[in-house]
Amino acid sequence: MQIIDTHAHLYVHDFKEDVAEILSRAAAEGVSDIFLPNIDSGTTGDMLALEKQFPNCHAMMGLHPCSVKEDNTAEYAEMEKWLGQRSFAAIGETGLDFHWDTSFTAQQYESFEMQIKWAKTLHIPIVIHSRKSTDECIALVEKHQDGNLSGVFHCFSGSVDQAKAVTDLGFYLGIGGVLSYKNGGLEPVINGLGLSKVVLETDSPYLSPVPYRGKRNEPSYLKYVVDNLAAITGFSQERIGEVTTANSRELFKTSFQTE
Image (cartoon, rainbow, N blue to C red):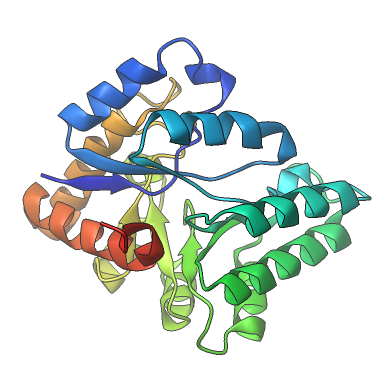
């Protein structure tokens, strides 16, 4: 079985001591590629260093909504500098977060829209964080969707109707450990929409699936997400790997064009 982790923060301090072992375990479980969403300028260096060391890790460039402050001029300049120097797998992660702090809501919208425009200009996908803001993120994507915008709603945890709105816009649903939670609420989404727009993710080191919930997540645990999808759909693990890998390769097609 080959699978792809479309969202893992493997460059953060949680993995400083054993990232090589983590990647070895991931490979042993069939994880062929791992996509690294950026957080802000403070994480860019570590992310790019990890990508350089491990060629199956693919860096994105973005400003996380929780890193958005009153004045983001320096962050925007840093992102533009990097985007002008080299290619990235995607813009992200970006989006809106109304869970932790809504002090900079206007700035979050500004940042999100700016990053959407960069993604369209560069013809690369956008990776969206939508915590307690799914409807607002859908509305903003709809506003800018002219056929030249692609991407994924990372860690999707919304309703069937919201999932349909996302997929109708041509976007993918990032499904991870939440699928295994008793009250995760994602089974109706999978039953209603199937796998045609599903990609796998861990969001490592966060949101570990059962049986590791509450502990540090890692890409090798993606197999538990596959197991849950198999139980819901009745498909084999191998078939789920085939479909979700094909979806991931389509989503991040510019990262695979040089193969």
